[in-house]
Image (tube, rainbow, N blue to C red):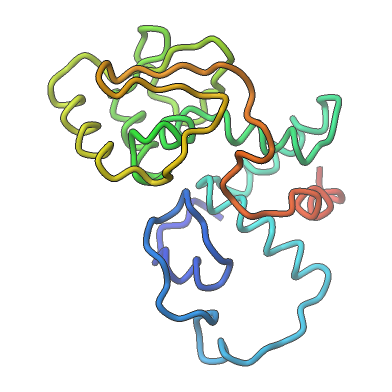
Length: 202
């Protein structure tokens, strides 16, 4: 299945708050659809699937990309779930979003894809680029790029800047100081259930 392009609030109503997908909040508290208000008991598989979908849709990944990240996380020593979250959080599109340069991750990906963002002074237009500690992320020195980000900075997607990042609004330059810590992941997700979901595939 390719990247989701349908109504975002429908997903929020079904899965809960996804800060990277949209800033809007649903007016109705129950899932969408004809039987949305009927409470039904979810199977163990259903619970795992929901957690996986939260992660996939929040970061805007295809199923193929998600599986690739799980396989990469497995190869690294340490908790697979935490490593998986770190890999997703350190993507360039997510880092641009967390610095407040874009209101959502899809908007941040568009900024990156259109060549408005530089890493260590060089334009990087790949949203999945893995940011490393010590790298400087800035807005391209062009009036159009700066105006776009200036507008976005007035309405950031998330209020707090994570501890592993720093950002100077006047210079429009940020720095990655380290790897993200688990408590700074904005999404409410149980990453262990995601790893369990992929245990038979990865």
